[in-house]
Image 1 (cartoon, rainbow, N blue to C red):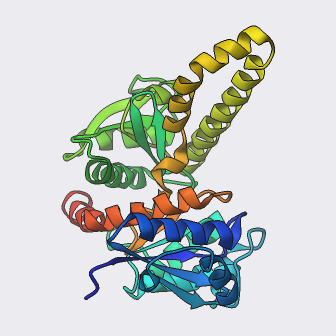
Image 2 (image 1 turned 45 degrees about the vertical axis):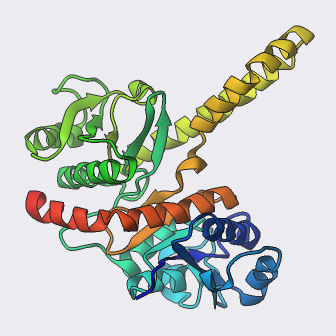
Length: 337
């Protein structure tokens, strides 16, 4: 058995394609002694990029593929028809046990479909949620679900809470993480039907630290460690937070450049601003895993650079080392089924 944890990546996916994906893989194996990366994609393109770097040759393997999954095409058709695409081939490596995890910056829809159809859900899991880490003033929290299942049921959200709690304890190291359900108020009687039906189920569930409803405005202040919601709400929350962070940065920069006085002030606060911006940089935390699958599937941003790819690969190593899936299987078997 190999001493390395193997991660398969989609070398052709994302806006930046092979140059950034390959560089991320090289940086990952150079920074971590325990990881091997299989890059799936056009062999000539990938080898041309690899030739630019120094790395231990037997820690990166190239698997040649002849097709690419298109972002604008039907995700289901792309996954079913393009059997020799870099995404499908890499996911099959996870399904066959030849890789512990998969990372792609490609089509979100295709990754979600491929995760379900190729890798498959573990027994007892009804839906696999997309779960990114999101920064807040206290650190980070896990947002579950951020885009995978738009029409969720209460029992789905209960499983999200269980899986999210395990992830935050195992990966982030937060003991007894606080679980909150996104709502329009903190009172138990408020909310839509999904929230009202889910709330008492979470309240009665043993094994999680449910603190009740959390309002969206409190999430950036660290109101809870696991943010539970359906994918429509979660995706909206995620995009508002990312858009607001970007807008604030641009507004601050524009105002700093308005006069000599503000430029001097800007220079004085620049180190502090850099620290804050780093804390709110989502690429620092890797990608968003699809929780509850029989293998690990991680989605990174479509415009991901080598930095995000590297962190996502190392995230897969951590996930595997700490046996997150084994713990989820045990918890779902004991507490939900």
